[in-house]
Length: 120
Image (cartoon, rainbow, N blue to C red; front, top):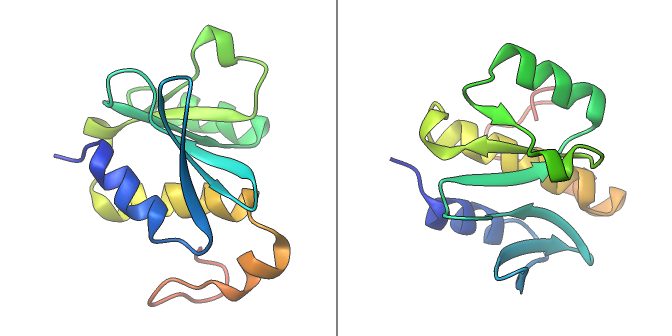
């Protein structure tokens, strides 16, 4: 089963990522912008997500994605680690959030193994 250590490993594998503790839990930043955090008890993680996309995610997979009331006005979504389909899905979610936070010139130069335009 996936856990907070998997989130940390994937986040720190991305270029120019640094880990900082904020609010008493780990947060991960690129170019000074936070892109993932592991709040609470480590069973979930939060990532950047445009609001319009987040509503679709939550509607299509409510067992996987949600937003706590205190984050309702943010552009973040939480995902339950136990509900993910494996490490590949976790990686895709973390990388997508990293791309949203990274400077454009850095994000454009980073490609996952097997990457093709249009598939992340």
